[in-house]
Length: 211
Image (cartoon, rainbow, N blue to C red; front, top):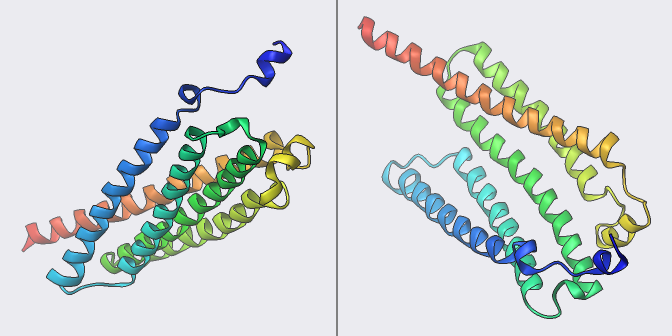
């Protein structure tokens, strides 16, 4: 690649700024309607608003902040001077780090909300122990990964500069394995929730058939 190619500013089409703006706005609106419906049903209709609902509200609040930051990035890319301004680019990179941290924190709170819900519906001791153990492991690892992700280059505000200076943690040997591990734990925890619920449903169906 020539020097001109290296310094060429990416276009809005390449950055997918409008796609990110629309997608973030749509999912923010849909999630808001879903949470409002849950609050109405659980809090007003059946009068059974619990800790899982409060945690879900916190989860949505974090998600709303995350999508708002994504919208801010898209608007910063669209409006002049856009990515042609070094300060704007550094600000965008800082927001990206914040979004990554918020994503991890959101998944932790979301898992805690699901755990509280499933612990209310499962009766077997081993099921409860598996849920508590898996969520505890995920929470501990997720919390550690949260701090690593945010401070991988030192001060998040200097992410762009430190990245250029090579002061960040290596991606291949540290960040990527940790990211994969987080993804695996995330998926395994979800499978544990699903299996626990299916076991509970099967037992309930069997008991109903016997009676």
